Amino acid sequence: MDCHEPVDDYCHALQADHLQIPPNSSDSDQFFIAIEVEVTQPSVESDSEDDDGGAPPDLRVYHLETLGLWVPCPRTERGNLPASEISGMLSRAGVPLHKHKYMTGQISLRADEIANAARNKGTRVLPMQVFISIVACSCYGEAVVDP
Image 1 (cartoon, rainbow, N blue to C red):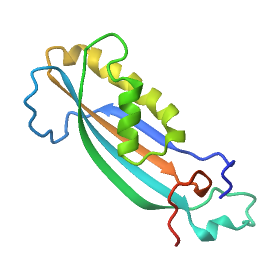
Image 2 (image 1 turned 45 degrees about the vertical axis):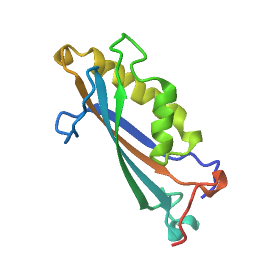
Image 3 (image 1 turned 135 degrees about the vertical axis):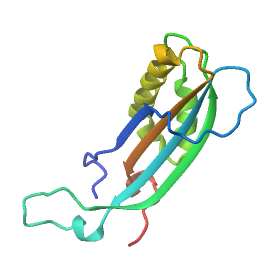
Image 4 (image 1 turned 45 degrees about the horizontal axis):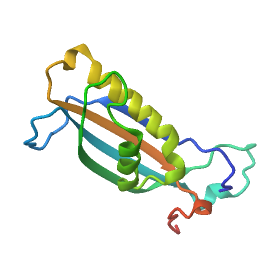
């Protein structure tokens, strides 16, 4: 895969009331964030030129990471989950630094929506689930598994 070729990385964050939330003794408002990261790479067969005029490559999942984190929530209008905190979470979950910018914005916006939602008023634990799918590229030093 050419590293200058655009890829369809995906990030979706949502309030997840169905999560199994571990005990927490904090008296302050907290996000419990479950992050699921899927790392894919193009299959070797799809790297070659196809006769169909450039169909998208077949991707295969080679790594799946799941991480659960507690993060304080100040319950402000904006900035309930600081970019530095989000970037640290993404790094711990295995997301390469050059992919953080877009994902940080998506997660931060959703965190503010959850923290300020009327239905969450008075709720100490704010459950959030983040689903991420990224395409690995060896040009950035990302681990790409040999098939």
